[in-house]
Amino acid sequence: MSPLLFTLVLALAATTDPALRGLDPVELCQGREVPGDAARTLEREGFHYLFASGETRARFESDPARFAIQMGGGCGRMGPLSGRGAADRFVVHDGRIYVFASDGCRAGFLEAPGKHVDRDDPPLEGDARALERGRELLALALRGLGGAERVDAARAVSIVKEGTQESGGRTYRTRTAEIWRFPDDLRTESAWDDKNFVTVATPADAFTGRDEMEPLPGPGRVELRRQMGREALWLLRHRGAQGFEVSSSGAETLLVRF
Image: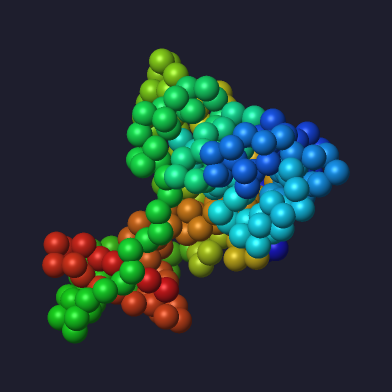
């Protein structure tokens, strides 16, 4: 792990308490609340699942991305970087299981599930003109940030955003800070009033947590990369990466994939 100037306190995140109130996750995804058997268990991303039969356990193992709690256990309303939801506070939507940090988050998700469910990025498409226009816009962005020499000389950057957020009938003061150290080290700090969440990531490792840090599940890593990919400076610093491609939809919008 590269030497970030932060101290990590690591804790084992797994628990032996049954997730989903002990219900079989495969049956639950199919709309049935069937108690699992303590003799048939499986650990995944810190959750302790129980299964009603060997068949459902085998189905889970064959496709955990479908049957396991989504977003790596992150709150279904706030996303995979929000901190861990409670495994007994769940919703099944479109055959998949989401957990939540609070009853307010659960209620907010139920009001408009489609607004909160993670979706894959659109494929990079476009003819030769779209690819050419994408390169033109990329060059304009590079010029707007002072040119290639200045962009490539940047070693670190900090971005701070402050505001408010409504949840559960309460207004929270929010503050997020992103600290990048190029090329790929990142620390984010997210605060809701006095509740603070920290995420630290390098190309090799990623950890997240509040009072104690734990490994960041795969969906969280995907979301981190997606969020960083919305920042012009980070994208421009990676324009020479293997497989970097850029296209424009014609609406002065860049689509980037690498």
